[in-house]
Image (tube, rainbow, N blue to C red; front, side, top):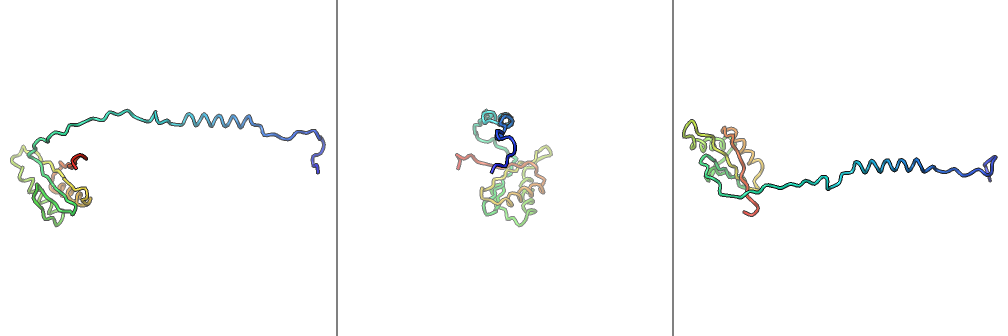
Length: 147
């Protein structure tokens, strides 16, 4: 059955590939322009090196140790901590040992927390230092070689 009427020599319809190729070329150019290459994103960084020397003696520092069970030591003396206010009072007493005159600077609070100590026990030390009025706080760390 031939449903075509009229001209029997009529050619079959074709898909025009020229616009299709043009669209693909535009997409290819877009992808090439927007692609980032790894050699453009890498940075040449020379990290600084440090020689670990013995720390200078600082007479105005308070060492606070926090072990994995939540026990506290201030300057190697165990502290019976009931709440944050008790810990703050102990910090004030330790800071009072350094107050020799009006020109004395606030002591530095160094927190030596165990790696397995709870976050809450470290936050309690920070809160106690704030209540005690001690604003110079730092954390002690060790190198991987010292383990």
